[in-house]
Length: 506
Ligand SMILES: Cc1cc2nc3c(=O)[nH]c(=O)nc-3n(C[C@H](O)[C@H](O)[C@H](O)COP(=O)(O)OP(=O)(O)OC[C@H]3O[C@@H](n4cnc5c(N)ncnc54)[C@H](O)[C@@H]3O)c2cc1C
Image (cartoon, rainbow, N blue to C red; front, side):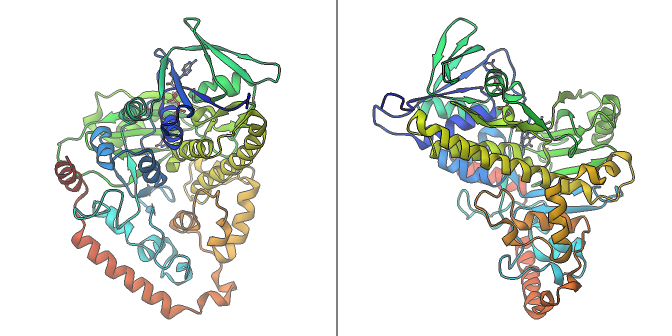
């Protein structure tokens, strides 16, 4: 087959580049001489974005499939468990908070507990134990449990730079990924419009059958060379700036939060991610509503005097995504495909999903690639729509009075698809069948935690059938209380668990 796909070149050595290389090379690992050749080209003079430390539970499976030990991830990336998100000050801004935990409510799929909880804001408290586990600062599993298992579902917080290093070493040593250092200057296309080869700053040429653009915001191959336009999402999600810094612990033995803390500010929010050796903290905000100096003041106020000498790094971004994600023989993964603010850590999750799709659907030849590209584009387009809707949901139910928050509640700032969902959910809340497609990113439970946590109460009274299982619902909630009690007594403190586990797993 003359136009067979035998060589794949990834451009970019950030999280997207190395994670894609690892997922694709691990999937196509073979002793056969004819196996897929994976090359990664990265510039030494263009830094990675250096943030992106919160992940989604899909990462467990991704890391396991690549073949990395979970204990290596923890020891080499200063990782910690992430059991969900705690959203502080998103509703009134007066200390209110709710959790979006990663474990689904008890009885999920059998009985929807929402109509039966005593107060809708307490849905996560009464329907699930993980809220309590997080509040108590506990690990999701005990010392006698195996790697990758857990009594509570979890993802990771990890040091972005160390994660890329771990993946790079693994890719080169274990997965035969070829590493080329050089800055791509241009791409040469053939008469079909496909990329034939890329030329580096020292004139070297890299030829491949499929190019994966992981060049971050510059979107060098898909955006610039293949001229795929960018579709802005800034009329729904206003944030376009971030200030990020590393915050040392006051004491090496300080507790580590086992969830991301997202605290609402007057025109944005602050993320707080606990790793074992430091916290990663940053302020995401909308420049239309807040100046850099004001954001810096918010961030330092949040961190207190211990951060007085710390200078935050500014990152600007545009919310949105490319009109196509795969064009010809070029597919974009990571921020070259798109980025909307880091709320709910969807970016790395999309990298995992995209890389897995490419690995599993690697077209056998250029003729089939057209079909694969079409399907990939359809899926990714749907997913971006869902992500925008889900993130927007976190804002539009706010009661905060500041202009930034009020602007988020204006009709014109709400996607039509989300308006439709809300109209339906106004009667019975989100349920599984709203999300039964295999390409859904978030389960109904995620929508429930966020909407109910923000006080959205469907008119359950209009649906008499919803109240027929009172006894069963009470039983489940009592069971939840018992499980919670048991977990609070048996699960170890988060930092203590990581230390002991890593000591014994050496
Ligand atoms: C403020 C902020 C917070 C975030 N937080 C999270 C989070 O908590 N969770 C999450 O999932 N995501 C988060 N993200 C997104 C996450 O950081 C990215 O998805 C992830 O790091 C992947 O980035 P990337 O590899 O696409 O781009 P980059 O890290 O920018 O890497 C681009 C790579 O391309 C290379 N490159 C560029 N041009 C060339 C060229 N001409 N030739 C050769 N190489 C080139 C660069 O050298 C670099 O290696 C956040 C993003 C921002 C902005």
